[in-house]
Length: 86
Image 1 (cartoon, rainbow, N blue to C red):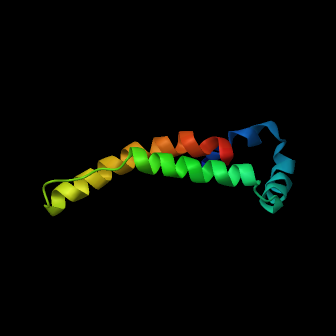
Image 2 (image 1 turned 90 degrees about the vertical axis):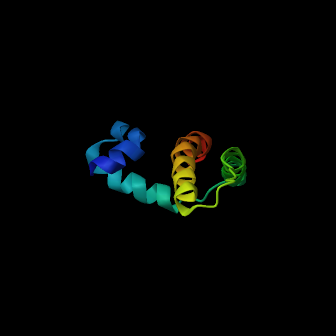
């Protein structure tokens, strides 16, 4: 297993190396519950509402900078808001 999966799924460290592929296959077959879907949708709506912005200056560089800052702010918020439901 590569390092990216170890960072994204730290719980896999508790499962023996030989059983991890089977555990991932089993998890992929499991469907999301309605509570998980509603929680993810609510988290997405809240993060979208928190990261709205408006720009009075119409310059392309200002819009790009605002979008970049918005992305940097939204990413940790999405991890916190959606993490428990994934």
